[in-house]
Amino acid sequence: MDLGGTNIRVCSVDLHGDSTYNVKKSKMTIPRKLMVTRAGHELFSFIAERVDTFLKTYHPIFLNKSSYPQIISLGLTFSYPVYQSAVNSGILLRWTKGFDIPDIVGQDVCRLLQREIDLRHLPIKVTALVNDAAGTIMSRAYTLPVSSTRTSMGVIFGTGTNCVYLEKLSNIVKPMEGSYDSSTGEMFISTEWGSFDNQLSVLPNTKFDAKLDKVSLNPGDQMFEKRVAGMFLGELLRIIVSEMHTDPEINLFPAYRSNNERKINKNQPALLTRWSVDSSILSVAEADSSDRLGILRAKIEEELGIPSPLVSVEDAQAVKMITHAIGKRAARLAGMAVGAVVLKSQRLHEVKVSTEGYCEKLVDDSDLKTTIGIKADRSGISADQHTIDIAVDGSLIEFYPNFEKYMRQAIRVIEGIGVPGEEKIHIRIAKDGSSVGAAIIALLASQQVMVSSSST
Ligand code: GLC
Image 1 (cartoon, rainbow, N blue to C red):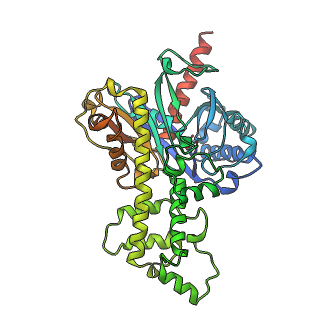
Image 2: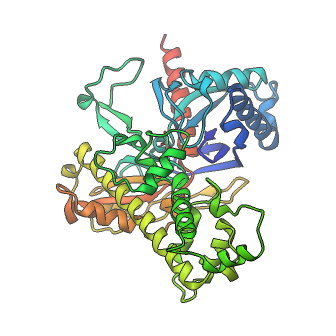
């Protein structure tokens, strides 16, 4: 079960144990009324209902106790800051990505979901709580051959942004409560880097960033995320472009303005409506390099509500320049953050120079609704021992052209990394990794419970 910033996904994963798996999945946009509400239980009731419907549709046999007496192990991907004191429990610290349900803050989200599942008498136990970036590492690691490198970082560049990395236990100085397995000498750390530099001592801060922060649900918080993640980049563009349109000295979209002056338009266009612009416009603008920018002009109509005959080529060029500045800044900031974690993890000194190049996409069958086999990514086996393997997921890294290229440009100029260090970094997309990774962790967690209960 994967609760992200935009979608809710339920999937069942059949792990074959040889780097391959089958998956069945269903996805739904989270209804807005469940994201900002006083009635917290409604969200978890909705999630449990989705799980119930999924089982009825894809696995009705699991609901028949006499033919299937086992309990199903569920991993909950919950991509919000939590205080996690065990693999299957975590207290929500605060909401991010447009959620605001005050009475869930401070509560154990696994217990809340289990309660709703039990109310429906479903044969399910929530055995793992997983951040999406951690899930992404696990799914990437699972698809790599055992002899290959270890994936040591998982990064999300989607609606929100975050990084989880493997840290040596000896480097963790903070007192840790709860139960954990110390036998490997390592632990995943969720950096929650979305709230890096909330005090803005190093992040760039334009008047447009300040305006966006002011109208957000969490002013002063998630300042890095507000400059890097998909949830905010469309709105940032809208703020800039609307100011350029209303300022008579700049007069962006002049044909639209004079058209409006003639025919008093009662409907407020998306251009002037908060949070109405999807960040996918950035990818379209970056990708359209045609002379007349026809695709971008159509997208401006779709996203900003300005009819494309009223958008001149010059207007579209201006939008393209602005989206490029927003996207490139986001990618460079992202590169800076990845570089910082690479340095912190001290793994650069543990690997030799790789001969391999850039990002390769994992085998991707994104539209699948029924079972299919997903092949293991066996590319680059020989070179993998020499690399820092980073699993990534999210719409920006997947769809924004050159996101990785601009990230790498920034990584290369970081002192202590340089070109040789940057070449050791492999960035691989683990599509839907957060959901599959949660299933892997849920399985491991349920096996641990079985081992510990059989040894007592
Ligand atoms: C937000 C959440 C974080 C999550 C990230 C990506 O920053 O706080 O937990 O991993 O979005 O979805």
